[in-house]
Amino acid sequence: MSVLYRYVPADSIRDIIDCGIKLSQWYDRELDFGDPMGQRKVMRVLINPWDDPDKSRDKSYRCIRLDLDPSECRVGDSDLYRMGLIEPSLMERYLRTLVPLSDYRFGVFRNPECLVFTSILPDQIEVTGKVQDTPVLFESSESLYLGNLLEQVEQQHQDSGNTLIYAYCCHRESKGSMYRMENQELGITVFVDPETDAYIVTRTP
Image: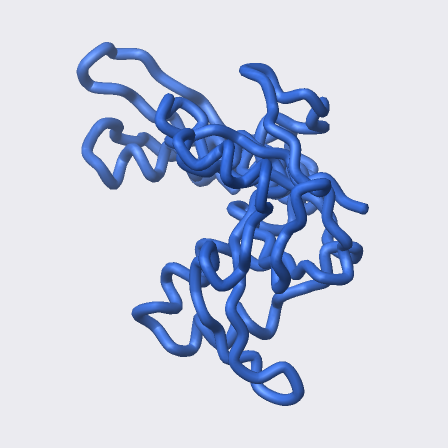
């Protein structure tokens, strides 16, 4: 079994504990998976309870912990789904990149969502306390995803973060909050903040 999470209205807790969560009542969306699955109702649950910071701070919601069969769950990229509502090619990519929960590697998606295809029985549900009862392995899926990307960039360039700092300064320059002075011969770029006169020196990638 796999531990997952969902935020539910606080005033529904008693009914959920007594009756479980019926897919027909609580489903979040219908998706067309093509053959052989076809059109299916799905519930959206979380791998990490801190992946929904708004509801985690909202007293009108409670977090419940779910013990679910991973074979009944698929993990997808929530960002692709939201953008896919406007861009069909991204929706196709979203459906194509869904993976079984048992095969998902933490940090692959910035904002993962776990899709559940069945109702959830009362004995699979536990209401968590103010502090989550089951320790989580990382702060949030987004922090793990970004950390993995930073590590990949560093492994690719092996320049102690110089490329990332250079890109950050170029971004600030594009917003008008920095300007640069570059010396091609020395291979050095100096970025200056005109408001504070602070500067950052990088190697020119």
